[in-house]
Image 1 (cartoon, one colour):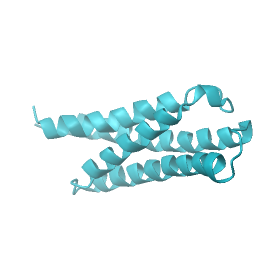
Image 2 (spheres, helix red, strand yellow):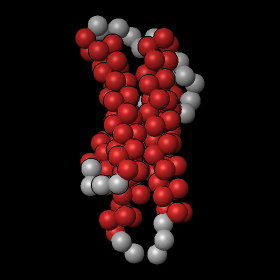
Image 3 (cartoon, rainbow, N blue to C red):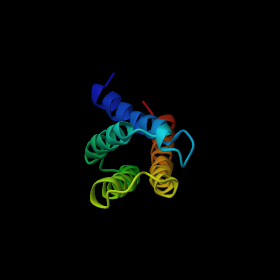
Image 4 (cartoon, rainbow, N blue to C red):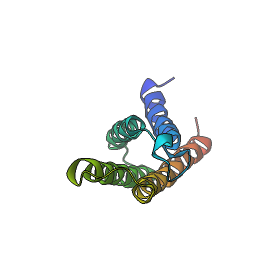
Length: 127
């Protein structure tokens, strides 16, 4: 068993899972979405992105692209959250929380594409 491939797959699947954990809940209820979960989702997605830089195939390029999209969406969600709370000193209103969760949903779709491609690549691989 190749531990590099195991860690590669682990972080791709973990990024999808933790993103889903943040996304799950009422879209406009701040009590259902933790800032810590969003932070962990960003960190895990960034680790998965770094691991994807080593892939040299066409599918590797698509995997990297999906990871960059997920990173951009999650970082945008964190920026919206941080600007709302720390720059404008506003309370977390349902409209802003909906935007944050929607950006997380976009990252979730990108992560889902990434996991689907990983599974397809694994199934079509020959020994």
